[in-house]
Image 1 (cartoon, rainbow, N blue to C red):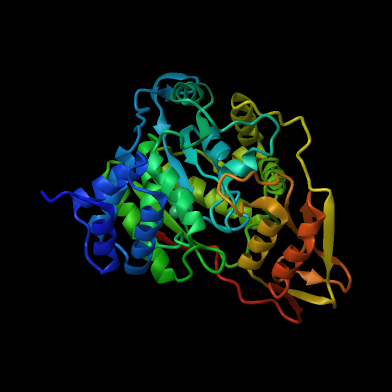
Image 2 (spheres, rainbow, N blue to C red):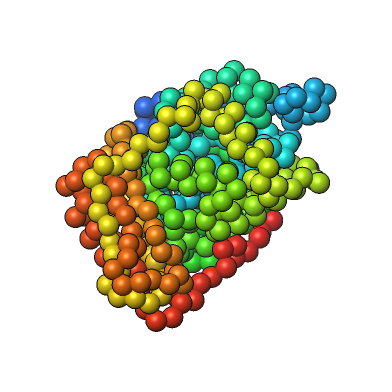
Length: 433
Ligand code: URA
């Protein structure tokens, strides 16, 4: 076999060729262990972004990323409080949206229904928020859990949300590089990134929330369906039965975009209230997760009414060191955008709101940078709701007042007030798998 080297691998992809299994294994292993430089991986990622990868290449790229670290196995665990009943392991992953806090109410809902959820989760990527950044706005919460602690937590409370750590470390490095090289929105790179973590984390089944629209990485239904199909095939081929919902991401989910503001809204949902779109998507995904886990007869909506989902969330947060009795941080520099006229709230562009939240400090401009936990946007009027002249439409929060003008500029043009309700797509567009 010819000796492999980074320039040859990059050239093959740059010129539209297909990478061999050996080349993929070599480059992923080399990058994980520092033998392939950031500059070289950046060039290869851009060549993949521009020329794509075949299904066979994506499959091998995913396997190589899984093989770069540990693969957890929790199949010997029992359900919390039910010795002798094997844990019904299931997880969900979103491809990234705006105001997408669904994991936070969803996990406790399915835990309350008897599922066990080992969730390797991520930080913000590009304009999208990260579940871990949001959860870290709860005082004391840690996502850095050892394998033993995850096992113990699954046995005792039935769920854990953790940083991928030693799972798919190749993805951790590549994810950070994609974020700063404009190579995020590539179907094979998203598919392999999501599925490497999900195959390694030890879940028994998987439900994917594939986002499509202005605020998603993929803008067209066809692209999103192709992504869903590739990920479903990767999961099924690797022993993790996988299905997907294709969901709308033209408008932000719920009424908050940021970190602590999204936790506050999730707590409202867990208390039996909250925005109807967040509740609806939580319940739709819960139904899929429970079916995938083989749990029937449970009523996810009842867990929000009777407080059992809230109890599960409290138990999960406490197990991870979080203290929900402490107030959530909220940026002290604020600005309110008011309605120039009365009428009906028109279309609301998720990307404009996401970029405003990012400019306020909710996301990162540099890898590893701390985010502002109290930064974000509160949306007072959603599309189709009546608006009175002069009333508040958005409130912006940050710790850094100088960030407000840039955030306001991002919001400009992302909304309108008109005379009729805008056309809206259904939240769940399709079910695949
Ligand atoms: N989520 C991931 O884990 N990776 C991506 O590339 C996009 C969303």
